[in-house]
Length: 161
Image (cartoon, rainbow, N blue to C red; front, side, top):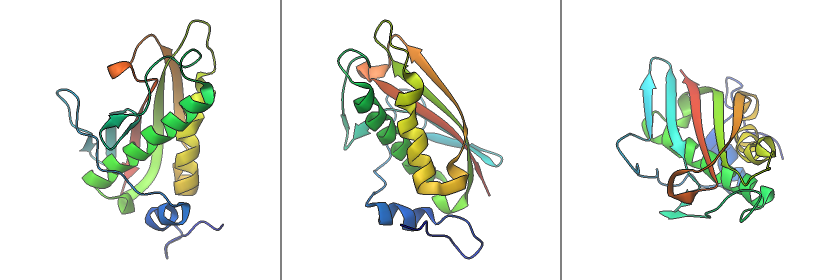
């Protein structure tokens, strides 16, 4: 499978999503007093995205207890797809220059230390869909609780043209 590129050599995110059989979901409505994404200068700051599909949280619980690390990674992938949807709705993926920073939060059972592996689900989605511009700096942090009992949450800072 080759990564589709535009005339200027940039990855064509739309073609790549189609090639992968992925569809950008509707933007998840905010759960509180914030917006899904905001532009400041040449950056888009995407609010924390939960693994919500068609309005439904896909799992609840702690990774390392009720949720396996593999399930957590798949949930982080959903969060990343939701983040791309938020970018698309605000400015369009065609303006994306770089995913700069990803912060991943993992609701962790006591003693669970595999947060980086869980958040790889998000990082790998960005790399697969966006190629080199999807490579980013990252934090993967274990936390006691996340909104709605979600196992993972991902926020993103992206550079745009």
